[in-house]
Length: 420
Figure 1 (tube, one colour):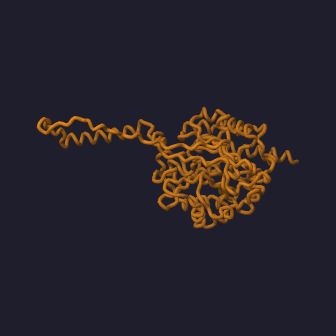
Figure 2 (figure 1 turned 60 degrees about the horizontal axis):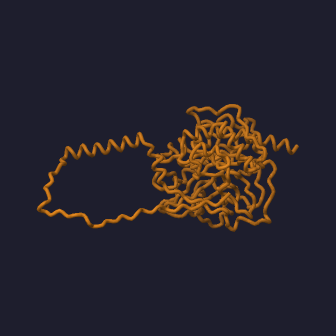
Figure 3 (figure 1 turned 90 degrees about the vertical axis):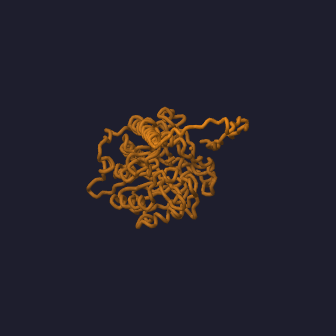
């Protein structure tokens, strides 16, 4: 994710300083040039090569090479804000805040106990995501969620979900474990970087050839999860990365179509209409909601259920570099990307809760229940809207999925009591 109130400034590319010579170096005649003895034989050369290899190994072990490499990976400029696409609508279309979604005086509570840390995370469905066994209607791990509309739900959003150590992303990975385990652990929203690597679509991390996952495998595994858990609704947020070429979203849709039953589960939303309840999506088996951002082109995306993210969502600052930045709520809760000024108000609030470059130590704190509860509460009240997506790195650290489920229970009870 991977990863918006005033326009972002474009960064210029640094230029190499010109190198000049004055040509004034004094020449040495052949007669005066002393004869040099060759100091290298095979023993010296072997020792030299061994020393170089040892130095490289020690550098990789003791220096933060990952952070150094990440600093030189290309960054992508944020899209211009406000968005001026034809889908954005006009002032006449503006609507008032929806019941139960305003953030004024919101307090995102603490779950009763932490999820815990053990080797089974992402391999077994945690208790807080288990539906009742009596075959009653259940949505995303709880019957209470069924009464919430999609835009009233909160989702744990896995930032750059494709980039994991387990998935062989050895440089700049955002997670220890793969996205499939995140789904089992209770996360219901995935952010995936889409790359065109010499004509082949991959899920990479901004740059081709530094780790990749292929769409067919990922979509097959997501589809299998949804078939095994028919009560669950998943949100997919695709981010275009253009290291080797542009993204045509129809090509990604073709990859989805190659997985039997996948596109049949995609919910097609009409811009300006109210979002359906979770119950509706589960009963109709339209349990995949799709967004995209950061460029790319698409032929009739709306009819395919592929929605431009910032027509529907506003997003907080995504370039925090420390926990102190995240705790500076005036900075980190400021909206940096979202709908244009004369368009419909955003239905969703995305709160970024990670730092760059990714850090498991920072995520362990950022994803803890005290830190996260305080952050979501402050962002909600500063923005006047309850958060819908909580963007995290290292999803296996902390209690994000459990806190999100607890927050949804609180919201469902609050809305229910307000309407009775």
